Image 1 (cartoon, rainbow, N blue to C red):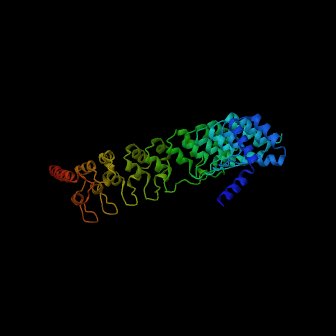
Image 2: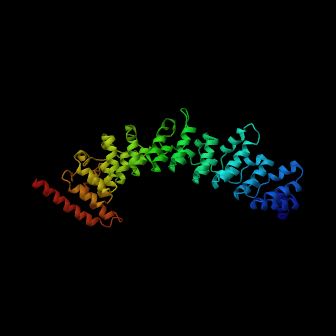
Image 3: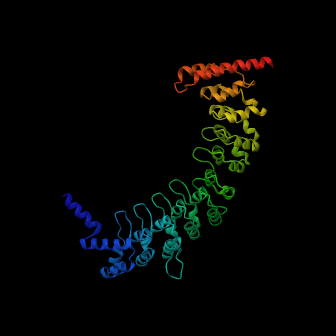
Length: 423
């Protein structure tokens, strides 16, 4: 029974043994690029036009047509000859959803393969057939990538330029990851490609969907020129924040991209925008200890020093909790930040409490030695920062240096009291 089904399946796929033998012969010619033998065999063995079209439409186990196979092996002359006999093959997809043009775009051959396929799509008549060209260029594979996506993913700029010229609107088509070719070009810092897309594809009323290319410009840390081009499109960009509620300024602050922060920081509204976790851009900079970024953000928006996150933690809280001693040192040196030193978060913890809780001895030293720090402040659990040290020394197995830091903290407290008394 199983053998019968197997034979039936084979016949449905390939037909009789003679047809299978003929298919294998043509498949071999396609991989070798043997155009003359392929043509001669077709003309000799398949004289009936309908039978010829049907045979040329056959697909391999991975659903590749003879055109896919010829293009995959770089045999563009053969691919063109096959298309001249049966043009619909140009729009056929394989198991990955790729057309022959997808394969050409991945390979990066613009002068022969890509241009030839576009010419075949356009047709050989004097009247330009834009319909098939546009259909082909806008087709997506299983990853929802157009041929332009594939060219850019592999860095083939000449192919990309050719495809943009053929149909600029594809520059804004999104794939499964919600990335458009414009996003990909921006991400890679391809200035000329981004310029071309801006000139050809983006008009006053154009809506740019998917992931914002402004995020790509920031995350790619590219030249100011790319930032400038993309920022001019901002009115067209539908998604100015990502799925976490973060703006490009959040990312620029987090990755210490100074040029990006300078560029974006001029707009106060971005500095005052929280993400879904309740953090402002300056909190991200503080959590990473980016002193230069904090300075830049405060230069554009000085009042952001007072911003608190969803836990009601100021920028000194955040720096202390994350153990960023250089930034804490900067804050303590500047008199304008002294109002932050003893502020409480929503659990009553000061920056010093947090430094002790998260076991950052350098930050503890800095804060405890500063005479402006009030060591007797109680949090909502009725604990001073020293009490926290005592409780964590018994419960936190991960903090092996707790006793040492507890002793150090006691010494610092005595030293601080002595300083105050002498003063």
